Image (cartoon, rainbow, N blue to C red; front, top):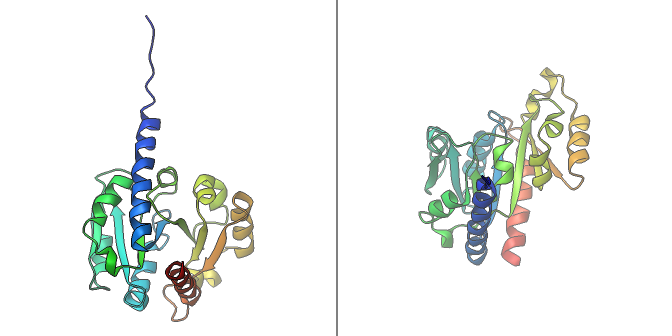
Length: 223
């Protein structure tokens, strides 16, 4: 008897890419710059967004879609720093967000009043790398507590990302972490990766990140 193999994963990813293209068109027509924020658990995505919302939320008209496996704890944390809706997506065990979830979340967001959208993906450096959400770019975080070879261990995510944020820089005096080696490791995977250095716990630790966001939003507005 003949055996027929159905490539379910390829079909699902193809459908996701179709939906992601629709999301990208929708956001592009609204003039909304969109970043898919990805990292391993505990790298500091939510803290980065807390500071960003508190300091630039109104200036840059920031909206957030945040994904978590079982709770909406991160969304609750972020909601304390903005009057805008923070759209929570609970994946019920799935290790990534998909374009359908993002498209549904956008229905609750006033895109006419939004200039910058962050999609805070599920904490995972494997699954989210394969899923296009309709973003302009992936921004990958990794912290100085994780080891310089993180990009070599999870190359696909760093290949797919356009920007890398090295977080928790305030801890450098207390951990054996070589920044130059980390950057070299990442650029060995993706030579075009642009780095930003942050500390969400230091008063001036977010200025490079803020300057980057302001410049990107201005560029999008002028396009």
